[in-house]
Image (cartoon, rainbow, N blue to C red; front, side, top):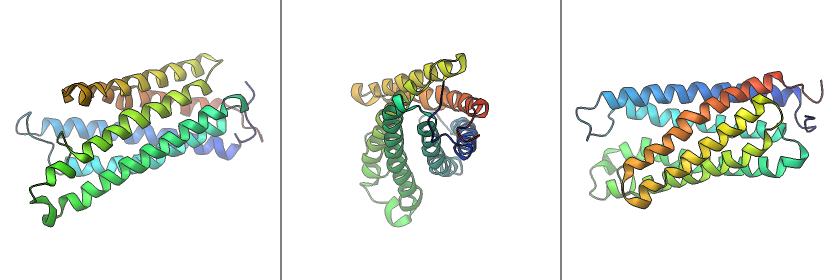
Length: 221
């Protein structure tokens, strides 16, 4: 499949670095999350420090890489499907801007003694449902993220590798959308379905994207 003129050697390297970086940070996030969950005194307790702070930092660091990955996807896309890759990039940027802002505020302001003792704190700056921050993070990960990967899926077709990436992106998006069943039903345990999308299927797709970019011949070669 002929590539768009924007898929240069620089774009190819850029995409490989972004894809590998995304996989590594999501893997680090998953390990930290499991460790934090196991370290709780009881299943009803939230994840404590230092694990919670590490999770917040990892999400903030991950966002530029995920946006960069969609930039590379847009560069890789042929002219026929660039409208979809552009939509994927826009929604990924919305995800990154929203969730980075939330997690940075919670990491800094939310941990400040001037705020932490206020009675309304849990309603605004916490990930205990219901809260404003939690609702906005759901908007980011269960709406903007699935829209991004679902729009990116049509970019990939032809080879077995590209088709596998397409299926994984669609699966990731479908699982993330299913996470909306949590706030809709009031049972937030259902939101864990979405986690399978962005911590399970998506990093596998990102790893295969790194392989696809490695194999692809840049237009300016």
